[in-house]
Amino acid sequence: MISLLVVTHGNLGKELIKSAELIAGKQDDVAALGLFLEDGIDSFKERVNNKIQSLNRGEGVMVFVDLYGGSPCNVMAINMKDQKNLKQSKIECISGVNLPMILEAMTMRKSMSLRELKNHCMQIGCSGIKDIFQEIYS
Image (tube, rainbow, N blue to C red; front, side, top):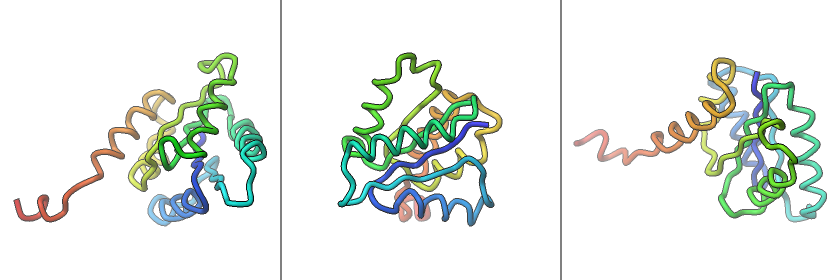
């Protein structure tokens, strides 16, 4: 089964997982790491690397970050660049994490490849953004 890691500023990732588990139930092999003001980037990078290694059970790790270009995203970009063979390490990462993405990843990670899951979560994350007034009254 593909493991999930949510890497964000502060407690956003932890709270997204808690919210998703209210709907989908408690999940194994799902974790969050938050970057806080007192954290150094080097120690945060090491924590992220260690968490990815501990989560990877062979099927890979789908990593979600909150903000493209933010420190959690940049740490993941460096980590992925540092991997000698990214295909062998089985890590995918997407930015702009939201609740629909996490829910979909939790429910579909047993039935898709890592690359399929990444592409599917990107599509779901975008399609979950709606103009409610337009949707209801058009």
